[in-house]
Length: 396
Ligand SMILES: Cc1ncc(COP(=O)(O)O)c(C=O)c1O
Image (cartoon, rainbow, N blue to C red):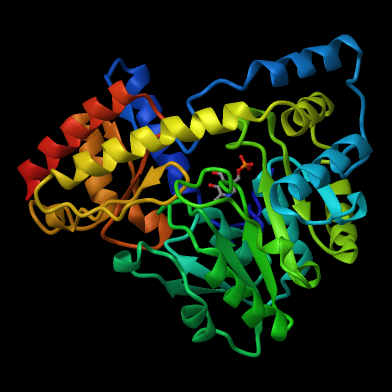
């Protein structure tokens, strides 16, 4: 059999392997060979899914709720998503403006593929979550990165975004609280960003994946602003809020025409998200919400510990994360010495020498930081931070 000259389709070359998965794979390889690895790489809650949610899935199985559902999710779940968003943020979405996806990532993928044309520019504040870049590239769009300052805690501003708007700007993506930096865009600034984009007919995608994990102030959604529904696109996820990463349930809230376009795409790719997960998601959204507050309290305790501990390491700086469960310390003090030329090498050496997995800043568009996920126990945090301390001291 002859091999094709280009065995893989060209569009696949527009995307890269997520560096977060790469670190996880290497950490896993070391762990399975018996090494005592402390893993700060994983971007997922260490808590189990709350019991009431698991019970709803068991009931779904017992009732044989195991068939295809409507592509964009059951009517019951879409209603529950709209209701939860209304109760939490005061929005007024109808089920026809809602669709359920296979995780929040899938909502972002569908939204991008449905709206970005070849050559369109998409503004992405940096540091950014890895996937935005790849899904925009995959759609043929052009990423325009907006560098945010460490001194401002990495929070993007309307003024910064405005400097990057051109006639080709199609969409702005804001992720608050942010993965990887934990930065939060406050409500006043978010409203300015909304006005800036809506006046120009530019879509504003708000990735609300971490919206409940905010350490100060009340969670809000820019979608509740008057007139927001025309240009604001909400990408939501149950993964982090309810510790449901493996269940794969996310959603989009958007104008009906956009939902229709996404639905077409989804109908030819995944079809519906898993029926059993959808029943569990209804319970997550409609049932008791106290597990969310309990997780937030624990994340706050860990954040305070991690930031204080990082700041004890000579030369390491760390902006205080205002949300999510990541710290993004500046480790430039250990770069340049002993052959460590960038944060990728920093992370590789840290894993090889001291068995701590962190994600290099290059994955998120910066070159002086690493991401530490504190969605892990205090015991692991203490162990891992002691090792990072020793590693930095040894290499600076
Ligand atoms: C910023 C951000 N958005 C969206 C997601 C998507 O999460 P999921 O696809 O698990 O719902 C993640 C997951 O890590 C994330 O960090």
